[in-house]
Image (cartoon, rainbow, N blue to C red; front, side, top):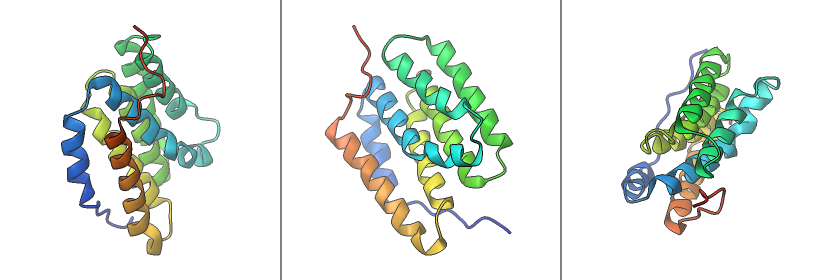
Length: 158
């Protein structure tokens, strides 16, 4: 069966514009939160595979100054490998969200990709009649998070 076509919410553009105004660490925190919200989708399909979880942890470790950008990138690559190996499109999107969350340590632009893959994971993980609402709910949460500047999830220590 072919997967349904993903159509994002118009709020995506506003999120991308707002993200351009945010600093690297705020975006890394946001990306980790976006990925964490859908991690259960990957773990339900791949309960023994820790690569997505480890990528989110690596992104947060980088934020706190506990690991290097290079180590965060390695975790990102591992999560993307897990995404390619997943048989379920929602699980794959969830792992890609985690990979992009970790990759945000390298380039802050990865944060918007983490957010988009989190939306896709939600989209593919629900019945067709709920897809539009799930996209809107997730994008609204993402936008509100960025508006609020919520960065209390593992700030880098100075």
